[in-house]
Length: 231
Image 1 (cartoon, one colour):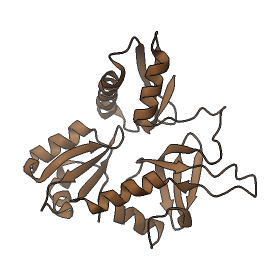
Image 2 (cartoon, rainbow, N blue to C red):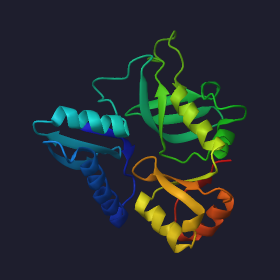
Image 3 (cartoon, rainbow, N blue to C red):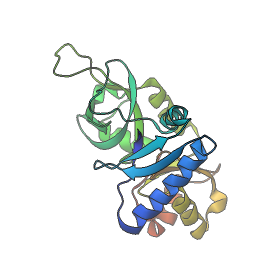
Image 4 (cartoon, one colour):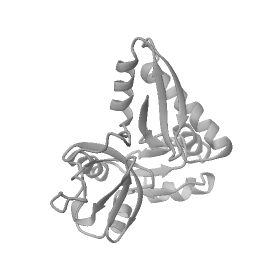
C-alpha cells in the first residue's frame, strides 16, 4: 500500500470522474510492471493505492516518487527530512499543510519574499490542496525543535512560476476538465499546456502574450473552481 500526497475531496459524479482518471494515471505509471492495484480514498481524502504482485515494491516506489507519499501514522515524520503535504489553510501566522498530520509552517519559514502569508498566496497563485514539499523541523513537543519550513526545491518551483510567461492555477478539477473548459471558452490558442500539480490541482501555462487575469475572467464562468493567477 502507498498513500499518495494528493487528495480526492469532490463528491458525486465529480468524484467518480476523478477516481477514473486516477486509475488511468496509476496505469500510466506502473501498468508495464507485474502488479495488480486498486485505487481508493482514505477518510482524510488522501488517495491510497493497494499494490500486489512481483513488482509491488518497484511500483510503490514509482508512485511515491511521482506523487509524493504520506507517511503512515505509526511511522511518524523525521526531523530534517523532506516530505510532501497539501496546502490546507493559511492566515497571518503561516501555512497549514496536511502530511497525514498537521504541519504548521510559520510565515518566517516560507522563504518566498516580503509580505504576509495571504499576500504570498495571491502572488504565487496558490490554491487549497496544492501539494507542496517541506522540511520537517521535528516534534514540537520538543522545545529545541526547529520550525518546519518550505523546502528549497519548493521555493525554487514557485519562483520559476513567476519567471515564466504566466500561469493560472486551479483546484477542484481534473486536467481533462480544465483542458475542455479552455477549449470551450475558445482560448486553446492562448495556452501552452495544462500542467498537473495533483489529482485535482492544475496549472494552466499561458502562451507568450496571454494575460492570466484575462484568461481567468474568460473561463471562470465555465469552471466552478478556485482559481488564482501567478503574479
